[in-house]
Image 1: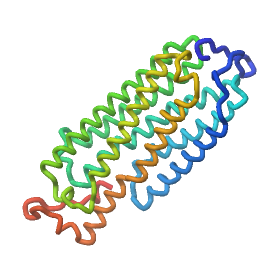
Image 2 (image 1 turned 180 degrees about the vertical axis):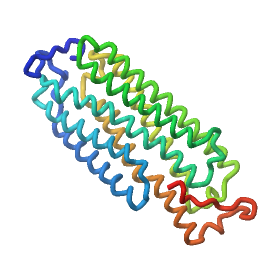
Image 3 (image 1 turned 180 degrees about the horizontal axis):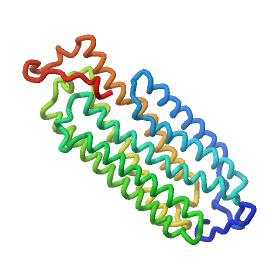
Length: 295
């Protein structure tokens, strides 16, 4: 395994890269599922006029590419290039998926005209989340690449774990911010959040759910790197398909099913049709502010 990985000139190692023979059937299945999920998000961008899922689309492409390269390791567990690139892609895909989740919170808040319910400016929140997410992406990609060399293995492992831990912290902050806004909106709803037809709480609960999956996935990844090559998480590929591939796939599908862009477009459509007036608690005191500048 990686702690004694030495590459020959022909690109192969004397030691096996996996303690098992990776399944090509499972890998191809995940290639197909991530490709379909990514295509679905690509298609949904146009009717919803929402471009913020682009990082998620890129992330699904990286996930599909990772599992495709993993399939190439079937009956070929000594070739290092598919192993290394597959690891780089799967580690780099997670921050890309996370970026869309962070940006979704701002879209939901703006859709129900609730920016004032956030304890801090949502404009700065989104920028800071994405900035830290870029740092996580660089850390995990660089760390994964460094782990391919025995001389930089320890430093690379540390970099990957730092990226994972920072991502955990960001998601805890994101969940806390969502909970704060959720609580304040329940106590003091806006005209738009009072409309039963918008069902904005469904979007908020979906973000809780996908954020929770991300946290579990990262905790498992941290435990995996802490255990090292001898740990039970690396003794079989089942944990990878459950806690990484499976969790990431559920996140992508959930974000398509409960799409924040659908909520925003619904508000815009209701505004054009004049259907928002009946939802006002007090239209004289709290007029509707259009969302056109937010799309």
